[in-house]
Image (cartoon, rainbow, N blue to C red; front, side, top):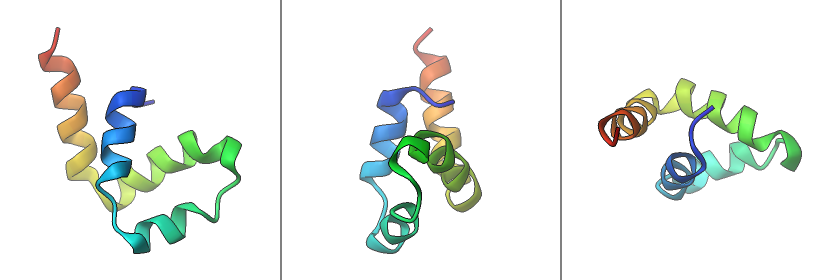
Length: 57
């Protein structure tokens, strides 16, 4: 799963249509379903976050 910081930064960049889709999930499932949603709809943002994490090491 993406780190909380990366996940939150990607979520913050989403538009209202994406938020309407994510609001359909149970809040306790959101970290897992949200990551799957992001990988499906915005793979470029997920890859940027993962690259940022690996470049910090």
